[in-house]
Length: 352
Image (cartoon, rainbow, N blue to C red):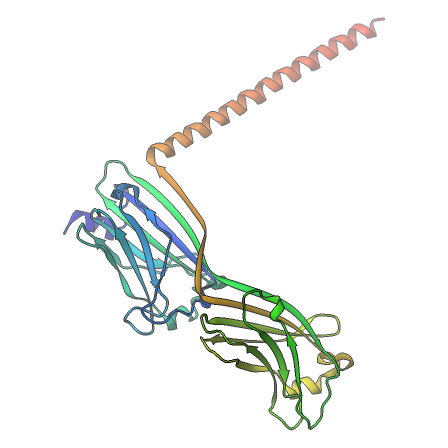
């Protein structure tokens, strides 16, 4: 068996150079790319592998494997032989075990078409803590005389717009007539088409639930993915009920309506003192939009550590520690001297 491969498989990294690239994608669920469409990480250079430029491509809906997220490592420029792994971080900070793959001078990309299934991604093992998808790519070059470790961190996010809007609906009554309460919030967003919120179906003989509806005007050139979190507040402003919904407003030349159940009528009308104090329904609306999967990079940092530098750091810390002891010792001697001088002065004055 090749010695390089056996070292990597056994985890013996004492005689290798290692580069770790950790990429976090924030607001991940706002990414609505279709199958075979990818988002690209910031570029990075692996110091011990020449001048090649590297990056990751992530396919949220997969490249060819349906039901999976796909991930690939790509290189541009002259490439040297190396090994690498790709893994995803769980909410507890640990990384899911990854397969080991190789790169050679004739390779420009390699990775996993079935990186993680959508079912596992949204399963009991939480991978999307705070809606953040984190990938770790570790690249190794074996059998080196100068062991080193480089850690590179990059953060990207799907750009979103957020609105927090408190809306009080007055004179809510039970009747056999349907009603539609509406407010225009277009002014809250600069570049979004006309936007209105509705709360409807208050009538006693209508549907079983009160609905929240969003109305968006024509949008010929862009699409919008929206997430709505609607809270019902009591008389003291405390949240007593919440409902969530999300929807993709695709390109359209006409106005589009989308709605989802807000609260059941039985729950609303049988607890009027809580949900309808003085006949008023107060909603706290948290609305978030993303448009056309715009990705922005907002953080990039890199640390480089060699065995020599580690030793230097330890020696430097030791020097500082010794210097601190000497300063404290000098301070103690000075204090003792002043204390002795004060005693002699006091004895001299007392003799008079």
